[in-house]
Image 1 (tube, rainbow, N blue to C red):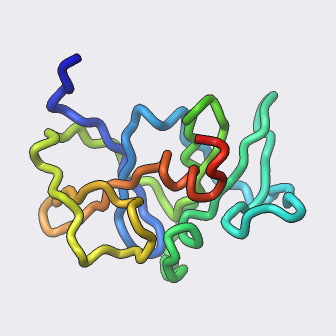
Image 2: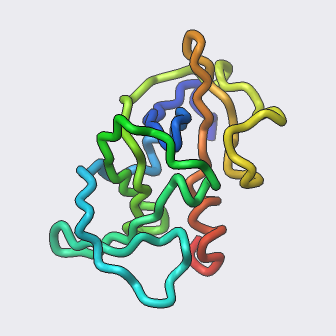
Length: 150
């Protein structure tokens, strides 16, 4: 199967940095409601769960997951809900910027200067003007939290 040269990414902010994820890993974007139900003895990155409709969504704090400082004052907090392995796992982000269609050749390999010290979660760097957007591997981030899931 031939890999397409185009990639559709969702750009978002967390901890004052710009990130993106492959749109094919994302089911929906929901407004963040601070009324989450805590899960006892859960992973430290797990904020809790919500039930917006007839299914549960686990919420991962992306700022904590990437080991970032919570610096963004102008938050329009959102949940990026993934459908990886048919699990409803949402990443809590500071804001969603938008969707871009880019060519894979525009994505550079991640260098040593990344916004996060977490190994292996940044798969590439896309530069848009003077802004650097780090592409995240959401599957890896989920498997780092619970290796049994992915």
